[in-house]
Image 1 (cartoon, helix red, strand yellow):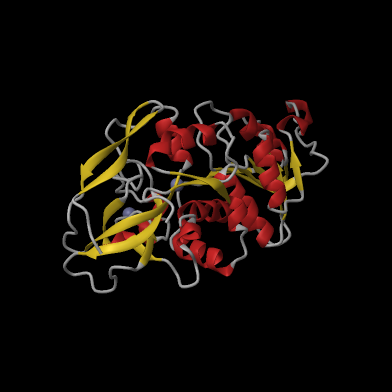
Image 2 (tube, protein in one colour):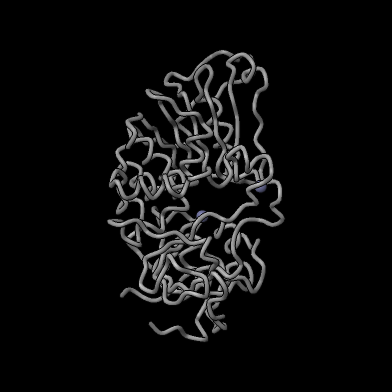
Length: 347
Ligand SMILES: [Zn+2]
Ligand SMILES: [Zn+2]
C-alpha cells in the first residue's frame, strides 16, 4: 500500500470557512500507525468550531473516523496494513481518582479540550496504536464511524440511570439525540422526541419512537404549581439541543424522582425552579464524552444490528471540500442524520 508524503486536508480558517490544502504526512513513528480515512462523521462539536467560529485557524477537525491501516511503525505487532480500524477514546491518565473509579470523562489531568487538531477531515491520519481500535468482524467501516457519538449517547443513558420500564423524552433529534432515542427504542423503552425541524421529526419517526412533538406543545408550570405534573410525565429526559427553552421544558416533563441529563452544550443558561426540584426530588445532571469501555459497548451494539444505521446516517456524503457546507446544513437541521465526510471519495 502506498503512503503519500503530502495529503489534502480540510483546514479551518475562520467562521464558516474551511479550505482544502496540502499538508505533510509524517511517517509512522514508534508504535504509530498511518490510516487512510474512509469515513469521518461531522460532530456537534465540529459545528460549534466551524459554524460558530470557536475553532483555531489552521486546525484540521474531525474525530469520528474509520479507515484502513496503510503503514505501521516500529513496535506495532497487532495491526497491519489492510486492517479496518477506527479512532478510539482519547487516552486518559489512568491514575487519578476519577480514572481509577472508572470515570475517564472526569480525568483530572486533562490539560486541553478534547479533539485532535490534526483531525480526520484529511485523506490520512497518523495515530498512536493505543488510540486506534479494530473494527469488529461483521461491522462495516461506515457504521463503525458512529462509535464515538454512540459512546456519548450511551454515557448519557448511563448518567440518567435508566431502568426497565422507564419512559423517556429526548429533546433534539440531531445525531446525539437520535442515537439516544434509537438505543432506548432498541431496549424496549417508550420514547417521545421533541424536535422542531421537519427532517429530524421524520427521522425520529423512522426510529420507531412512540411520539414526535413540537416544542411548543409541551406544558410548563409556574412556581405556584410546584407539584403539578404534566399529563404524560417521564422518568427520564435528555436534552441534546443546547437550547435554554428546551432545557427548561425538559425539566417540567419529569415525573416524581425524574432525572434530566444535559448533553447538548449551550451558552444561554436555563432557570430551574428549586422548589419543584425539592418537592418532586428531581435530578439534573450532565454527561460529558463517554464511559469507561464506552467504545466497546458502542461497537457491540452497532455489530448486533439492533440500531437502524441507515436511518441514523444521512444518505448525502461530502468530500473534503464539502466540510463547511455539511456543517452549515447540519446546524440548520436540514441534514437529519449523521453526515459523513469521505476524504478519499466514494470507492
Ligand atoms: Zn463527536
Ligand atoms: Zn485521570
